[in-house]
Length: 239
Image (cartoon, rainbow, N blue to C red):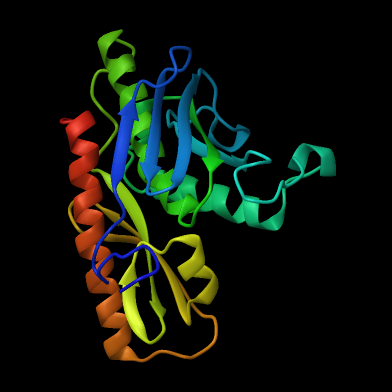
């Protein structure tokens, strides 16, 4: 039995609250166990310079953690003068994941910025951010469609992510912080609603792993992400 009494293939409870903020074009609070991330989508009528005049849109992301998202206070990165390398990595991952299911031409020359703010961290903050950010993005697109700004949805599929790993020799899904800190292998998997891979990040922290273990981890991730997509569809039933 795992640290929080789950089975090896059992996800933590997932809850997605859409429209959490009244001030954003799209927003969602995602809770995965004790991890909570507030995701908001903001629409701007401009694109980065490298896309100007091409008739294509852009989706990007920013990620941050509140100082007391963890047991010990972490200083705000703004006080350090720049985001950490970890923050840059996660922001790029979220952006890539969302752009993988987007038709930029259908979005037109506008940018949607996804802000993912971790309110409470207990493992899996980057994967929860991807899953919740997609809902915020879909809600913002829905508003653009309702206002007649867009003729058709630029979203081609759902996208969600989860973590898997090998803890004490056993493949498990959706690692909490205690498990993540002890894992022999740590993997983050991003997949579309149709079951296609967007990104796989796998690292052997202590012991190398083999093909059967890799297959077991991918199988766990595939099943878990299918469940996350169903949770997304409950709040965003159509694209």
